[in-house]
Image 1 (cartoon, rainbow, N blue to C red):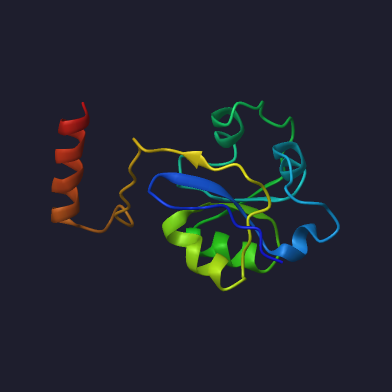
Image 2: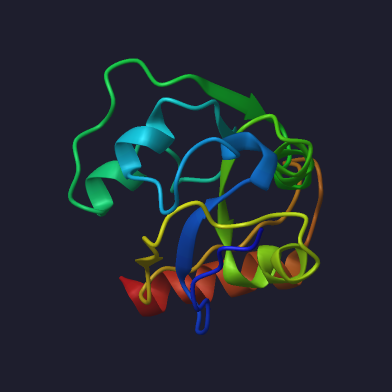
Length: 142
């Protein structure tokens, strides 16, 4: 079963999960139905399940069950394994959707055209070029 919205462009995030997670529920699911499921989140990503409901004009669930992971690939592995719902970005999940490993349980796609993320790894890592890019971006966006 594949339920996939158009995911073209950049700066978009939307819920993804294994189709087995909601096999008994009719699609598309509402944000309230999603919030009752285990929500998979990456500790470092600023746009997580706390921000998503408000960004789509809904209130935050009172006691969401959020399961945190230390890396985004682990979040996606847990989603593929049917452990919960993750927030996916077009560039990171489109292949998994095309392969049928993930699907989109709702029609809501949050567009974030003015946001950008740069990951540089651990604080012990020294990445001069990345540090210069971040400094330039901060100056440009200030």
